[in-house]
Length: 167
Image (cartoon, rainbow, N blue to C red; front, top):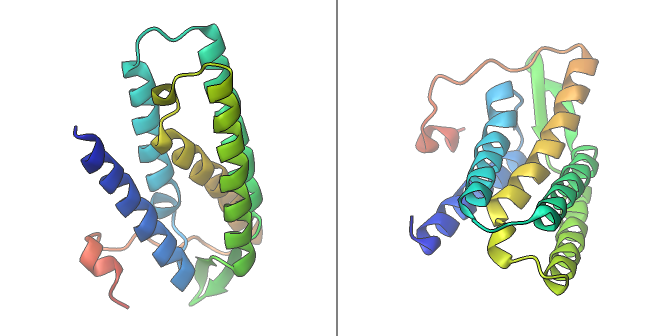
């Protein structure tokens, strides 16, 4: 797939997720874990396509993934999880965006350090970084939702992108 098309698709997924969560959305498992699983899977696939990686490269990739999950978990702790209409909802807060900005800075520093020590740029796929960050966020939000005792929202019947922006 063309690099620009790939980047555009990743950006579109991230924008849709962020807009929906900024507005507030019902919290259901598919929406919570869908984007992180897809993006992480694409990132793992991209790493698998890269030949010639050594143990040190995989060590950096794993460390970056752990860091991404941890930063996502911190971001997930700032998300407002609340009951509305008898089911769970989630909404990003100003603190969520502050933590996201700090996370970007930390991950950029980590990427610069990895490049300084010789890790190839294409061994650090962006979709893996974004995916594991959203995965850390989803794990914390999901745990908070389960602990609340309020049921998760049912799956929406209209799963099209157009239907997601109607409300």
